[in-house]
Image (cartoon, rainbow, N blue to C red):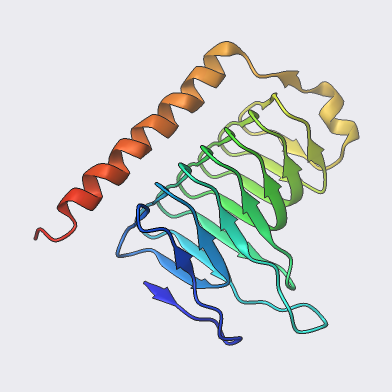
Length: 186
């Protein structure tokens, strides 16, 4: 469902993107080319800052926002999801937040008030808050990262993890094409 927010902003969705009919997109949102937004995802840009304005939620081309993902912005802060990035099932990305290109965010992970560099992998059930994850980092499942100092213990992305991230992106690009092809079938 595409709807405007109380400020009057309406999502802008590229023609080539696929938004599942059960997903909710509300407010100042820009969805790029070939993006897949899965069932029951909620993407909501509706909170304003003290001056009454807000930054948008932007989802870059070829990215996928999987089933049950929530993306929201606090007090007008924006969220930018780079290109060819995967946000896996039931994750939460809460702005202000910036996620780079070619990033994989695993199931049930939470990102808040942080940035994640290009090519990084954050595995399942992890929390990243209040820090800047450099490009190419691998954060293991169930990690809790709350400061830049904690990042010193994190290793670089392995080739296997990078290959897995790319395979998820490619699978979801195929889903965009498939669902768009059958969207009028019952």
